[in-house]
Length: 171
Ligand code: IMP
Ligand code: MG
Image (cartoon, rainbow, N blue to C red; front, side):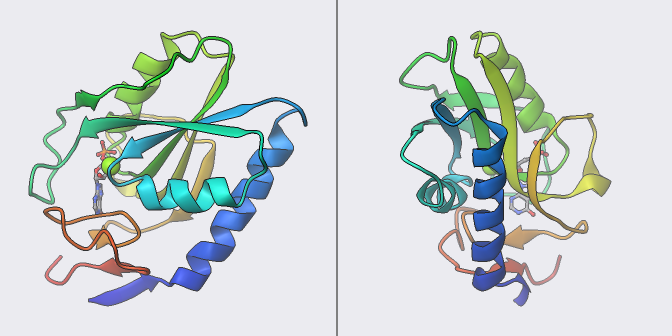
């Protein structure tokens, strides 16, 4: 596998994103991060630890690629949040925005819960693959159309634990 983004580069960029997010919200306001399982869990863990104590968090799970590198375009809610979002500053934390279908679905269902504000943070973006226009306020890295694994991202549930982001062989 070929390394696309090293653990050091990720670490630095996640720190920058955390600073940017902190600056964008009034100092005493709570920020509620919604991590998207499973792919977003590593990014979420690093992002929250680069932020201040005013952060709270919850997790949601949606189905994405079923053992394949091709999107079915079908999104299903697998695990819902534990707590409500009404009146809260919410940020969706996701590993990657590809076609944009998953995030569009998530933004729609979470916006319906009346958060005070709703934004999205993605570590990676593949703009060339977009099928729907989706707004992502915080993007770590913009990458080309290559299938990547590591730092939470999987291929058939493997490689999520790699520290770097790597391009999968044969893609
Ligand atoms: P979208 O709905 O097409 O934007 O797909 C988003 C989801 O597809 C992400 O949350 C990932 O789980 C998965 N995905 C998209 N591209 C990649 C990739 O290069 N590697 C691993 N998973 C990916
Ligand atoms: Mg995902």
